[in-house]
Image 1: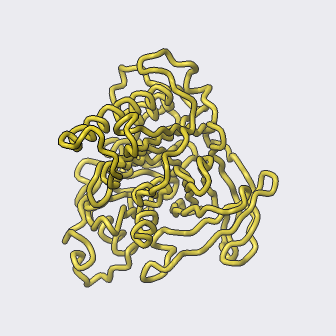
Image 2: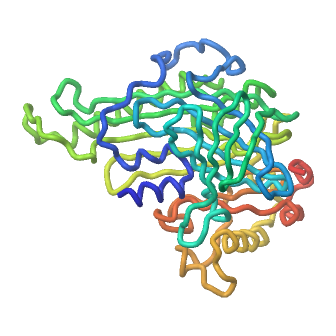
Image 3: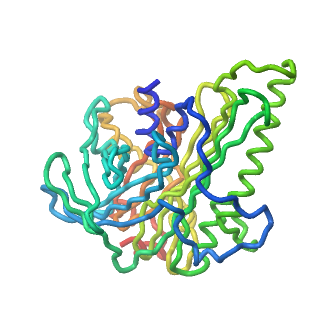
Length: 407
């Protein structure tokens, strides 16, 4: 079980996926005060959003030992909710001058001002899933100081020109399946939003609409508290209905322990993947467990033009007819990332003989990252697979209006 939980963490690259391990601990205390009821007026516009207690998004700049140029680290952290709890929602990624992003896993440190990060991108890990480089850091004023692979490292907090200020808001609650019944199982729901507090109003609106699964521009964007309230109410209703159906034949005074099959969980989180004008790229992560061997998760990625606030869809970025050439680039990228030799059939390691073109992508200054969810091209145990294609290879496939957007 421990190996499965770690593998899910590495492949999902998200602390929120820890819930798939189905801890037997009691429900956590809600991480936010009770939100407004569904349909209630917003208490503040998105532009005035502030961080939840203990939550933040920060950028750091520095130079890794032996590296020729500096890196930019995006670090999103949330507060520990209970003793021993993992850092649900925490996420880190970094990139150098080439715009190639790499993901980091945050390990819980005993010291509240310390961070232990592990490189988990396949390009940085060794063969046979051996661990990648470790970053051991502590906060020193506004900087992070410590070591990278045992060598001294210092990262300074920075907000380069063209980056957007972002607020991190978190909510959590637990729901009893059978209110008042002894030893009732419980469900857990978590929600994390990243809200732009600068840039055009359309940007915050579109980010919030995506969080609410609402792509209709004519509707008003709901603030995070109202999105949370609706999701919590829906989760509570569906969870209790499913629990009632599962116990319809049980005696009214049943007090026996329940299996973890009724410990439903739902998590929604937003992560920062790139933040440099004219691009803001976000990952929208969802996880759901409603019984069975394991939960399901996925990350949808979206890039926004920070000048207009509009999302950059596949059709708005790539030329018509680009798919065949893009498919060849994606296969080369998958082979490079997963270390699959050129002459080896893909289906010896993957579930497909040919890499399909996915529209789940985001842009950086140096290229694009394409993400495949579990079962799209690989097994659940192999997790999400993200591959980077440099901008030099993509340029012939881009529409003229966006050909220079990420340069």
